[in-house]
Image (cartoon, rainbow, N blue to C red; front, side, top):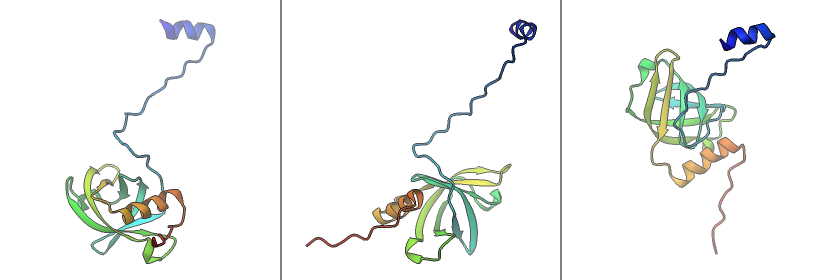
Length: 130
């Protein structure tokens, strides 16, 4: 009834669809990093302080799998910015060929490096206290 009334008045109605609410605490960002795992390099789609997602053939990983890998900055080869990291597979999307991971037990140094990736700021070297 509303649509026919709007059609008579020449009004255009817009349908608004809401995305399903994601259950995340940290905002995800696109970033130029790769995840190196078992001599394979995967492009990271997005990254947050809680985890990351990669583009990969979904058959490579299974949910709840624990993974030891290295995060590498694609633009530089600086080893100090690479992170050895422990991850848990949280999501495997076979249609999109995407895999989502959650970080496990980040050290202060790993957290600082991740933070520098996300903010674009250089890592600050801590000076010893005298």
